[in-house]
Each structure stands twice: as C-alpha cells, then as structure tokens.
Amino acid sequence: MTVVAFDFDGTLSDSEMTVLLGDRRGVAADMDEITERAMNDEIEYAESLRKRAALLEGLPEAEAEAAFDEVVLREGAADLIAELNDAGVTTAILTGGFERGVAAALEREGVSVDHIVSNRLPMKAGESEATASDSTSGDQPRVLTGAVEGPLIEGTKDDALADLADEVGVDLADTVAVGDGANDLPMLEVAGLAIGFEPKPAVEPHCDTVVSTMAEARETLVADDVLDDK
Image (cartoon, helix red, strand yellow):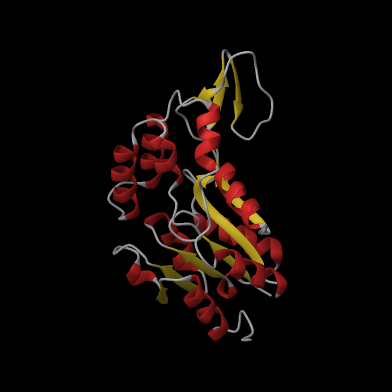
C-alpha cells in the first residue's frame, strides 16, 4: 500500500485553469506569462497565484463555471487513476489549482481520487461573500473577488504529502509524486519516487525519472512495483 500524489495542471491535465479563466476575462496572455515564470521558479508560487487571481476580479460566476467545465484530463489519466484505485493504492491530487475545475474534469471521466488538496476562488454578491463551491446565490450575480484562498498558497506540497502518508499509515519514502512545475518540487524532493511529467528545466534535475505520457507513467509505476503488469 502506498500513496501516489499527482499535480493537476500540466500533469493530469494539459489544461491550465487560470488561463481558461483568463480567456473569459481577456487577460489570458498576462496569466500565461505569470504561470511560466512561476513554473520555472523565477517568482514565488504564492505571489504568482495571487497575481493571477487579482486579474480575474469581477469575472461573473457563470463565466467561471464555464471555464471550469473546459478543464479535461489528458489522455490515459483516467485509466491510470482507475487502475491505481483498483489496486488499492491511495490516490491524491495536490494542486495549487481550483477544486471546482478538478472536480469537473474527474466527474466528466467518471473517475475519482481518495484525496484532493486544492485552492478556491472566493466570490461575492453585493455585500455577502461565499466560495465558488458554495451553491447559494444572492439577488445579484456573483463575481470573483480577485482573491484566492486554500491550503496550497503558502502551504507546500511536501507537507500535504507527509500529512497524507501519515493518515494512510505509510512511510514518506514509500510514496510517489508526479508533477511538472516548481511548486511540485517540495513533494518531488521528499517522495520515495519522483516522476517528472514533461518537467520544467528547473524541475527535471530533481526527478528520478521523466515521462511524457500517462502510459509511460504507468510503466514506471509497474517497474517500481506500485502496479502489477498486465
């Protein structure tokens, strides 16, 4: 028994949630530039996330939901997650992205993971505020506040992975982390097996192996005895 923790944007999905949201606010180019700088470890991830969220201030809830509905899993991701679940492996998504987009992508493929650790984009309607996952609504259309909240802004993925390992009852050295960007470095550095999914240049030296497809990720997990070969 072990834990396999995936990053989401750029790993399980080739979508970038903030860019999809930015498209609907007309700020996608600015979003993409900030994201690239963060993934290459040129600016702190928390700073980059706050900058991107600020650009989204005023985006209507309906537009945000439409953007989240565009988030998709990359080819083979759903099958790999399902196989890990069937094998009794604890699956997790640790992402600085947003829970609504992750949930939409998983639901569309009819697959689930054991744990999701993610962030949220607060929304407001008039003077009342709620999170984007809240189903209540006021008389006025809700819009994004431009803020962001959640455990993976200042918090790091190594702590999140350690907490999951402790909860499941496995050694951190027996865990697997799969990611691509600088904010994945903490979990890649502490996991027993660090798989880089088309990792950024600053990340690749910290990976035990590099893959470019979910099929290659599966082969790595088979070679490490996390999965049985079929």
